[in-house]
Length: 397
Image (tube, rainbow, N blue to C red; front, top):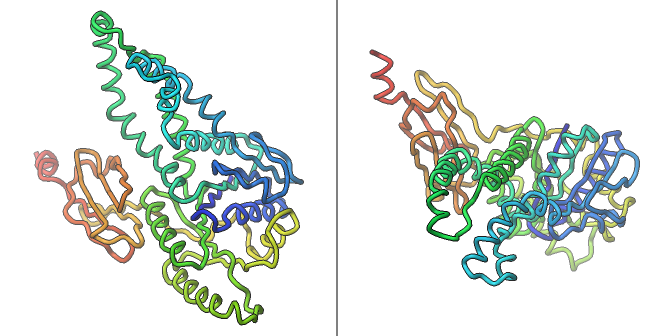
């Protein structure tokens, strides 16, 4: 089983590239499902075919699906939403406003990821090609299971015990709805579902991300940030696809300046993302719509390559033994010390890069060690752990 996630700034052509990849793989004999988690679905437009919320056969070995995020939201959030609605109603919130407030923005997109796990577990496909939302939404999507792990494993059990203990008292003194075991069970199911998706997507032997870019300054800047954040959360990028490059054979003077600008930006892309492979797609003379045009794109993009292959191997996080201690190494390209906040608190390590923060539950081998240093070595943040004084004293007794 292979999973390919395609993302990029809105408008760069990621849906077209994802569709062409799926078609190329299917025509090489790989059972493929291409699925869109982007709320603004355009996958059906790329194939020029009707696609719904369930997999639809497009041709031999190829199915397509535009995930119905609202339906998935209603399935997974219903019990929790009913409790939130009752709480808002008790607080006097207007019914229509309460309906809106009871759903966290972006939650429908997150539930759409559960279809990825469902398809992977079905045994019906060898390859899942996922057309993700634009980069900002994708990062929010992919980071939520990691954030929920911390809440579920640290706060949730305590909260559940407290509510259970005080519920008899509270029901006597207030009419406020109190969460019951049904609500906590729904939260636990939600966590289990998202955690299983998370584990699947950070398994670098199965899942990789392909960044789609254009040779434009703002697109490159966002791609660099996305690349850093994806590595922070443990996702491997195995290719950068530069789309819509003006072909060399275009000699019209009108495009001369554009070709020079693209050439300079392409050089910047290669310099920025190397050694990740940079794959190039030309600007075609017509819209990339329909099976015939997608086949043409896929053939040129993956000439001589297996579209389902892993094109670059680089572990986002590594723990290695060093003398009597250990090092934790995080691949954080384009990040510098001014972008970074690092904090160790108990069993947790907090790493913040820019606006994104990740909480690492440290591996057991590091729990009895203290951080002695942290420094960038090239594009990796290397954190050194040595055995703590208390642990060393206990070990020497």
